[in-house]
Length: 626
Image 1 (cartoon, rainbow, N blue to C red):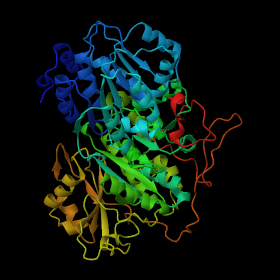
Image 2 (cartoon, helix red, strand yellow; image 1 turned 180 degrees about the horizontal axis):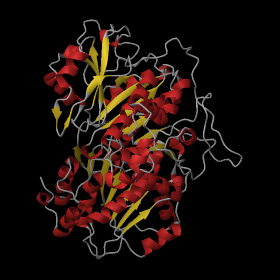
Image 3 (cartoon, one colour; image 1 turned 30 degrees about the vertical axis):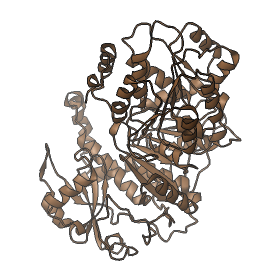
Image 4 (cartoon, helix red, strand yellow; image 1 turned 30 degrees about the horizontal axis):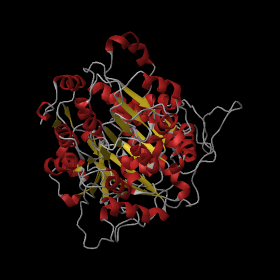
């Protein structure tokens, strides 16, 4: 279906075409025709990132009278970021409409300027609850001409404690107005609002109620509480291309975690309710243009973040309720893309993870926290791939190449490679030289699963009569081997298609192939002992696309070789932040092992705003902070 088939007017179609939209999403396809044809209340349930703003914004623009400079439509949403986003999108959809005026109303900026914008006239007001009620109490906003109230992210507003505010707002609008309620989940409070304020609402649901997106894979990592931060760093190091939001439960934890990551060389910053609006906008600009790679945020502050291509959402601590988990995870896998939601838990939190699975009807995939060896091997292959794929600029370097080459006349090829490896990865290798095993038994594992969590790929490769018995290929007794291959996600749509290729082209059987670590430009494959040579002979130098396959035994003897004899109480743990005399963050040392490598390209993150030193739960962040 196209937007033209929805019956939209020419100005709206032209604006949509200019944006580059080709066809409506599921929620848009179902809501727009209904809202255009009739005056009705509506409850629309759809996950974050499915195009809900256009679903209510386009019908709104089709029905609005631009010749009347009074508020005709009111959109209420939970946060400043979402408020600004909605205004920007509506202005894009209505770009061809003359005299269209949309006003944003939210806290953190001058209320006098917003009062001035309202006085100059606007047909659409987009507001957060706290500032909106402030304007109503001052008598600066007249809602008598309101045709419809849109409650966007209604479940999150209720979760933040805005139930009474929403009721006050609805009671301040005309009785004949309609309500369009858009939400990702359907908690009981929303049902109560529908019964009290809506009349025979049309209900539209994309997917199951209170369900997470099918494009999100949910991974579970279990560790001790004291090693939670070390486990997080290990996961980040093992995903060097990560573009992520890390969720904490309080503002204090958010600020502290972001500062620790910065000290340890990660490109990170914090987003929470104590930041000024200017500071928040600056941080979000850096995150959107990817000059900031890791955003540490509270649930409240992250509402309204509309950023494409986020690869991972990491729950540093699980939220209290399942709606929050749904909203957090919805930051990734937007617009039909795939994403990963990672939960990091200690032993006591296993039951909470089980409750999430039951309520949201999905399954966590138990994963092992990577070993130090695995991180180093992955970094080495990543470095090698980048070097191999770098196109030399002969015109630029030819004038210097001969002289440069002379410097290495007495250096053998192997020595040169060793020096290069040391030059690039020495700090990382030293840091992980005696890295401890951070994995622990989690009560959230399915019945009888190994306490090590079985690093399983999509579907376990082995059918075992006894679910409690470890796979033979998971034992550290030489019964398996590992190979490296220069094929990855840039060559295959997903791990399943890659696995199928290995079986078919490598002439392998399913029970001969174990875990696959699937990266962008290369992969690691675990094989039953004796089968690596067979697969190498089948695939090495075989053409694939415009290049040849390179496959070889991995330099690491084990997938997950750990220092098992290391005292469980040993290891580095969390390191205190070092500051110089001026209070600036400086580099940190780790037990004489050298500076921690800057895993995300280095550079100290700019800091702005103040940290909260007595933070309360996010539910207390109410009206005036909005």
